[in-house]
Length: 486
Image (cartoon, rainbow, N blue to C red; front, side, top):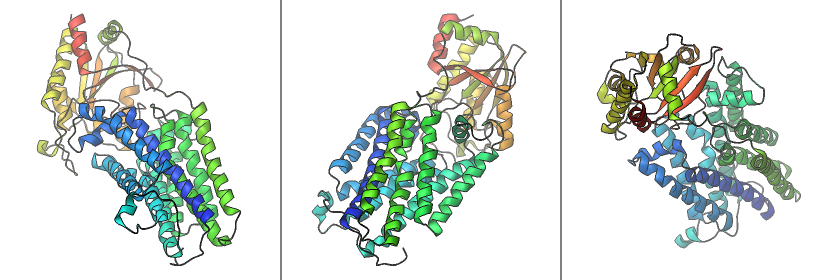
């Protein structure tokens, strides 16, 4: 792999490599596009990064889904270099939008297949001989000796990045959803408790990534392929996230297609390109790789929701008036034109994203409803960030700030769990005004499934667990106040 010249692969072998990557590319864009058609809530903030308001962004998502579908169909039926290049640029941009809107940079590595596969296909298409060749259908895929090293390194880096990025979710971030994935198949510890098993799996995956980068082999890459298919299948097997989890498996095709293609290439390179049975085995391997997908689509469990449909208004009001609940409040609507500073100082308002005029109106409507309904509000705790403090003060009059509603440390996580799980017996409602990120993993929610201004009503069950009873939007509060004012 370090030499510029190597064995000349047969046309059938190159075709096998290109079809494996081509199928992966199509699955990736079909999965991502379907999320657009379904208006996945977590995609809306990415449009906000370029100045598109949330309501407009949600309406635009189906058009973005159609765009992804068109790219997938073009690559499936009539690929050209321009579409492959745009697919790579689009895949990189959509991956970068995640850290640019506050998520981890590990997200970019985990999604390396989104831009690594298009680049590998572009290399197989070869350089265009004239400008118009960018838009002509690619009819012959080539892997000349001089290009084998670059092609192999593209797949090698892509595979390593996917492993390291996904492994970091478990080893470094310890994402709760991954713990629940393993728990769904009876492996690992209680996902709400310490999770050393998850960290061990994460570091193992990071180690695999380093091994692929430093010394890949066909056997290692075959194992990586099986490992990635298995771990990505945990999405549909567990039913998490709630929205059609099978799409997560489809969208992540790059993480298991890239090592498969590289494993075959290295195998042929080691055995000699004259092995004529290799392309047939490659195509069979590609087919076998798709079998789990077909089975999952046919037999995947129904998508789970974090809560049942909210009960009738009269029941909600009765629950609120009885008390002994936890009211989890995501801060009201913010000015998306502002951004938090990279190193947030909770005492500096100008360095934070603050409530918009709409957000202040939302907080005021919640406060008016609370007073009109005569609710037994107890302690009110708030994140020290101003958008939470302002929401709490406008809606409830005052609040005690605590870093436990902002910091993501293990100690703060245990405190947050305690607030949700400890039964209340004083007849009052504990109010927690916070951000989405500290509580999303505990509540099985996707990013932005809990919208700004939303309120969750939670009842601790006395056994270290809790139940989600209802979700209320600011508009719901106005309706309840009008119908049931004391």
